[in-house]
Length: 210
Image 1 (cartoon, one colour):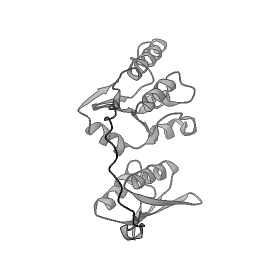
Image 2 (image 1 turned 90 degrees about the vertical axis):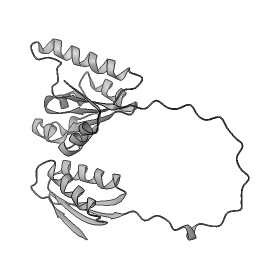
Image 3 (image 1 turned 45 degrees about the vertical axis):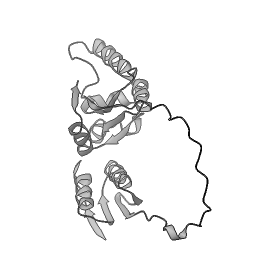
Image 4 (image 1 turned 135 degrees about the horizontal axis):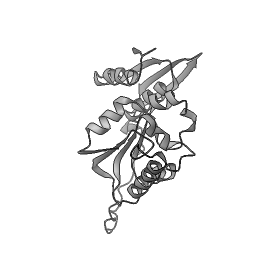
């Protein structure tokens, strides 16, 4: 078993170290971190890669034990009698998917900086219009004060939820919510890390930054 000791490492180091171990072919890992946000991000990465993950908390020392999920063998399945082919059916209508080429990066809680009240109205209107698009962006990344748009009591939270329901990936910077002390008040999206956000932006054909 490979041990990844990410104790005391800042974001996004724990995820990057775990990803490096996975890229080398590790199938059993033990990852050590010292904060819940790092544990959440590492756990999501491992589960996305097809691992079963056990999280243990030993007085703030968080240990994630992960192993590859085993697929049931074909021989274990009972034999089935041949079945007649299913009647032909009309192909289902395609479901619109978020645009692959667009990611939106928001780093403030207002649109523009000169008038805060106007800026809050504008950013709310912008997100509302974005959520009405037939093909919304693939990713909306919130950083710095932009994470405050994802709070339960934010006037923009419902628009972000609408985007999420349409398939947009809402990434909320974990370092930022920790800095502002608002982790428990985030009402939409996933608390993410710098590596995941950078990869999402790098994979986009276009980036719209506010």
